[in-house]
Image (cartoon, rainbow, N blue to C red; front, top):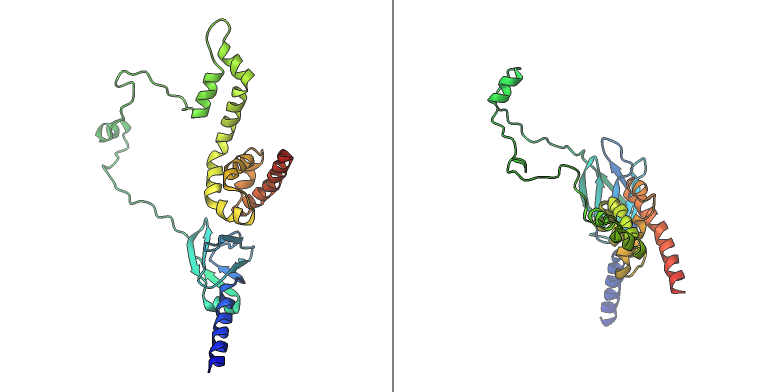
Length: 255
């Protein structure tokens, strides 16, 4: 009886272990429109894939993993991996076209076609600006913080303006110019960091203290915006290339 219990216990362990390991699932995305470049993300394990022009993809997963399908033209879908998916090593999902509903329109007074009469009949009011309250105001494009700092660093009064000279010598002007240039890529850089950071660093190890520096290293590249605008897959390829170079730089610095 004791031997039978042990055998049963071992069988349960083997059975449980078989479903705790990852399986490579071959999947297909079906939809009314194009199915190429749909993002397939294993949200549970932070793994990712992308569909080819026929909608096919492969991704590692295990039972109960959440697989998220995202694309610009389709509604986001989350599929929980089932036992059938694991046994058959297959997955098939249907995506629905995303419909952007316009807000409800409210019709006011009827236009007559006479511009002067219609303007006088309108209830619309002009917004108050600084001129209405007698305050001088700036109507140009607002500068960012780095742009304001750069402007201050490169301007100065007097016969010989010392401020620009000292900032140029100290390297502050050069650093501020670099920051202004980087600001154009900051929004995209932060979006990539929030969206892909966890998945990328799971496959490419880098200590937490160096990760922000790594993303700035990526943003400094002249092709950063062009490469990363294409797709998340292209962005990950770009990040991998920069990661190799970044690690080489660290090794050279340490030596």
